[in-house]
Length: 96
Image (tube, rainbow, N blue to C red):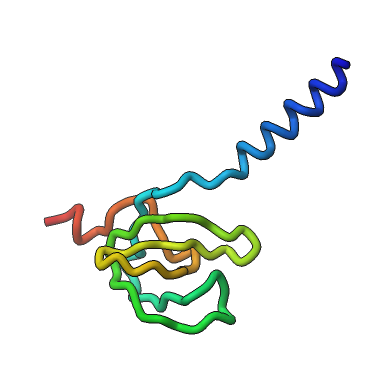
């Protein structure tokens, strides 16, 4: 019985660790304007660009493709590579 509880707690811990927090603030890297896509991968069509330094809301992530679904200031929802997002505001916002 103790083994079963331990296995259950371990599985619960792993599932909680992999859960994505909804609606996290992120920022597009200062060094680029980047294309955003209609789905979580390079094989989805391009739907526009996001300006460098723009604040976006991270809605979810896809661990297989390393893409995140974001909502920009206009309310548009699209997908962007996670490597092109930052946790800190852009330099032009922080430095007057």
